[in-house]
Image 1 (cartoon, one colour):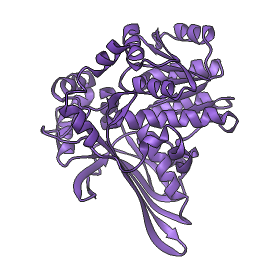
Image 2 (spheres, one colour; image 1 turned 30 degrees about the horizontal axis):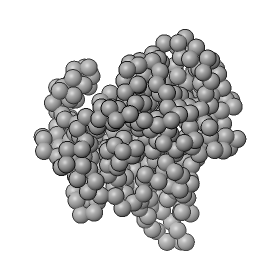
Image 3 (cartoon, rainbow, N blue to C red; image 1 turned 60 degrees about the vertical axis):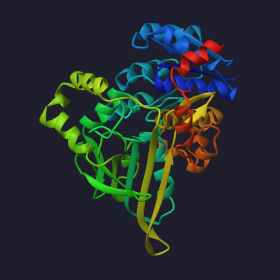
Image 4 (spheres, rainbow, N blue to C red; image 1 turned 90 degrees about the horizontal axis):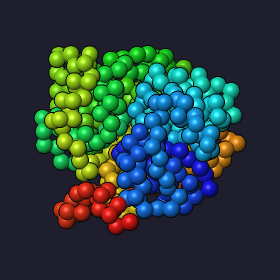
Length: 390
């Protein structure tokens, strides 16, 4: 049994704990500053091997005490990005494997520094983007003799947009604002440079439908550093429905809410609905030389909500949780292969997709499951309903 401490019982942490627990090979402690929230998640899953605990992970002494009294093999942080460095320090001190979901460039740099010389794996930036998108892009890159350009595009979108933003909140609002407001990295002329968020607006067509894409922070992960001086251009952009970028520029730049993110968060969470009926679009395009010819290869996939452990989970929950669970599973299954700072591109796409958690990225999904369950009223208060059955 792999022993894992999952920090944070929110939308992603709840599914991470459920996936590990359902596998039968993990002993999982799900910790949250709100102990009742963690208990509600564990009760709703109704799985053996899951235990809820109340823990404020920002209290470094309390975190270390928990880890010393209840040893684990790995810590998985699904906390907001600004909490992760303290967790990483505890993992390094106690020689534990460390995983997180951060998209924050500065936090990742601190985790990289902590990981230097570590005997355990420190793998930040797990999940979707950064995360799986780097795994998919790296696979295509290895198919070429010379690389000209790499485009990484990801979007978590409502299936049926009906507001002026053409958007629904599908994940962490703090993370969303961070991506929209912080400087972005890309490769130009083989060099890592910084570009502005919400710029670089372009049109993109996937399966006959028009979208827009624009610069956002963090999605490139470590891929730019890995391929500096080997790839002429590489960039990451977020996919949205046309018109979204213009509205976010108004909010963040013209109304200066990028300088008052607490207010922006309140506005978004007050006015923009959440939904389980979303779709995650993953798009990678690589151009370069193969067999003395200039060619292009693409990886394109649309992932929809899925039922796991008897409950409907949104596409962004599934892709993020499966992304980190797959990486954790690969590391703990081969611990001697991974020490120190571990980039997402270290993992082969074939190994990830064939993993029991990576399988949730399989092609061929549709909106039928979420539409049917919504129409029959089977998703309202489903966590409470599940808990009541246990």
